[in-house]
Image (cartoon, rainbow, N blue to C red; front, side, top):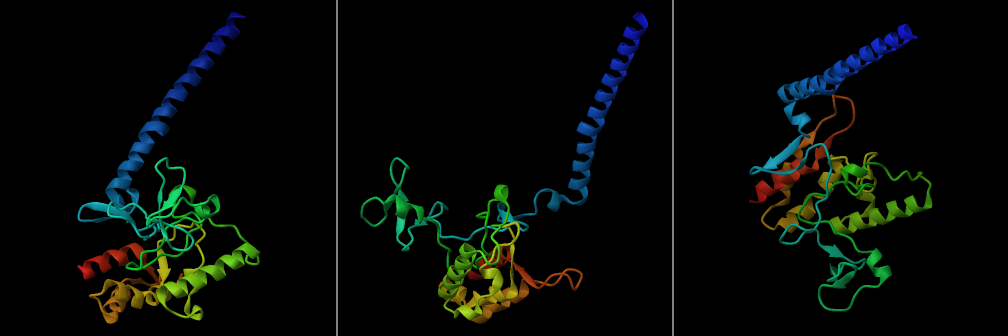
Length: 244
């Protein structure tokens, strides 16, 4: 009995020592060393490829974001399904119309959302509403009735927003990426928005804005993987500089 007990004690002690050593090696030293290597050799990637303007982070070049209408404080403005602006009620439980009128009904409140800012180039749609924590696709099949209607509605909206015919709307303008966070759009979709952006910016002409798009076109990876694309955040930063 004494021999068995002492054997168990030795095994337990060895297990405890192995646990402590492995905890220090794999739980402390390894993560710290990998963090140090990442910061030393790939700092931009390790920090999320953040993009700064005048010392302020405005987004990541790897994650798509919306460019919707905002108020003076930078908060998203909300509109009903008919495009009338609304504000939250005092108790935050509903919405009332900004320009007079009563509270919205529950059905009207369901249609409240943001609207794209016509002064900016717009990204492709996002099934995750550009939320990095909810990354994912809609999972609709190509023949799903809801998906077919959604694509038709988006095509009509994009065409109207940019003042073009629906047959000019490219695929990526109406479909979300698999992650819902693609930061790029096709060159075709960027060029489709040129006239609208130039018009809304007032002081810019179409040729200037089109040249800006051409300057920000990224070619296929390794020359043949993928297609030409434009990073929307980088393009809009350049647009802001051009517009002064």
